[in-house]
Image (cartoon, rainbow, N blue to C red; front, side, top):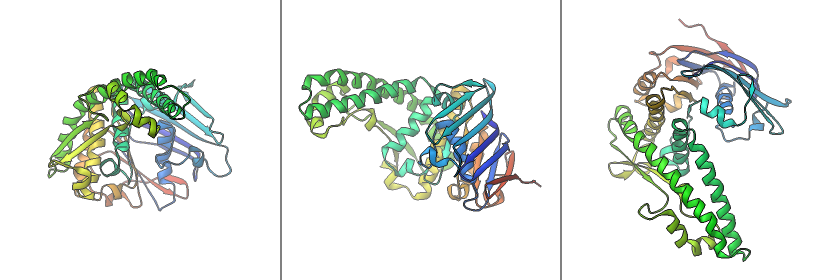
Length: 367
């Protein structure tokens, strides 16, 4: 899949921008504050309904305007050409259209647009907490098996209900037996979520290990999934045994919401043993591996959003990274303060270069 055209209206300092993109590398350069990252945010808003910066979507709307609009035409390997349009107002009202027809859920668009997002905080996948790695795992699994999202959402709903019931038991508003219905549901769905994650990771692990070996030959990577409870015991038994403690805490302490993907290098947790540079390389390999597995299993290419490409790829692995990325047939939207000649490894792919200045975008002539 790749973005053929992208129209952005009233997003941050971008008043009205129309871009004709190429299926290879689209390189946006300019000074800080010019609007480069806003272009990537527009794509992320369209695909996931929010900015990757963690800000409220209403903060994306240009000052003095009532809504932000992003329209795109994408070319999909299986569905052909699709037109997708999203508008988000300051009142958080969202309008979504796919080929002119109203869209029901943002997850419909997310399923159509497999993004891999590489921002300066990418190394949090290695050095950060388990939540970052769970999101990475769930995002990849969703694209290989879209129906997984429904199971995960049902689990999280049951978890919220059980936590509310734990608080009610602690306050004397509910008998302890009132927990059983939600403990049963959390256990059943939690086992399903974990089985799906384990099956996906079993497919992904050899791909990740191979890419990591190509990208950072000095690292011997081992990947272990931690379920969030002692796997040799059933989750329902663990939940039952934990009731006295969990009533005091008012929260469920076991289940896939506490799971983690343990990355080990030479038998040691990567987050405490590798350098910052190696951590960035390992995190890059994690994104590449999901894109490769999606191509292998579903014959679908991904789109990579790389913000501040110099910061992410100013490492010896830059040329190897772009060689691997080009081999995936992925479209790339990358930003930088400097021109593409300053980044190693960009010369072997079809490239469109854009200069961004004061919210205006101009396609640069190439030699």
